[in-house]
Image 1 (cartoon, rainbow, N blue to C red):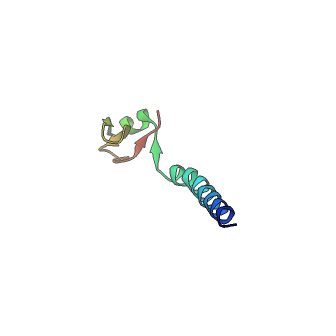
Image 2: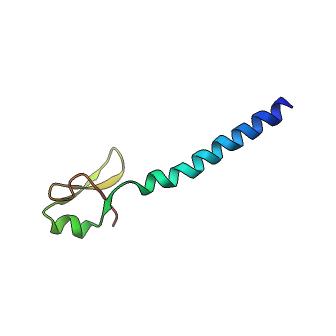
Length: 66
């Protein structure tokens, strides 16, 4: 009986994490590389996170989509 309760609890926790992760990723502001550059920014690669970011200009600090 205890193992069933533990299994159901674990399944609910994993389902909750699965539902929140896409929402969190969608909340990150992104901008295309050419848009960053046309607004006086530069596209730079951040090796610590493995993503490209816009540095300077109007979109300073935002993640690059392509």
